[in-house]
Length: 186
Image (cartoon, rainbow, N blue to C red):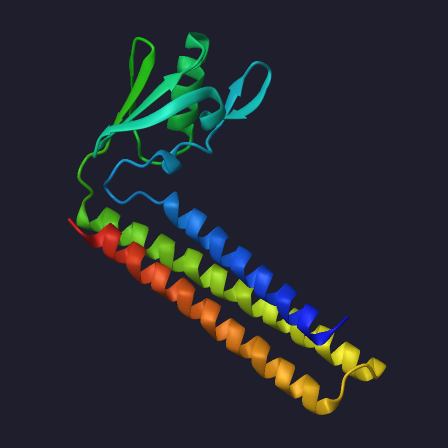
């Protein structure tokens, strides 16, 4: 495989890792209502597992209120049970065909817990980026042994991969800093 192809593949994988971390961050509660908190919760309906977002419209009519309006009234109670089982600390309230979730003010302890959770998510993301770097460098070394790449080209490519790694770790750190501010802001 060509050096540029290896570097491009590593960059793509690192970008995907960054996107996964951002998606995980969006599922962490910050005190504001966000549809991403509940949209991926799996619900037992119609003899199978379906996501809440596939069963209902999720809106935020107020900053601290989520409204879930199922398309089929028969799914109201299964959705309510699934949200309770998800252990997010949310208390759904059924109001005829609409499920409302009020978001109370987060305590300082709870904010600190969420902050620890996002730090762990960020660290997992950094580790994944480092794994991509390791795999790319191993791939470069294999190509060098096979004789397709000179030693200078290999060293230059390794530096490029390291530069990419540093960039993506810095991006994850930026996202972490932003999310922690969001969580800790009262």
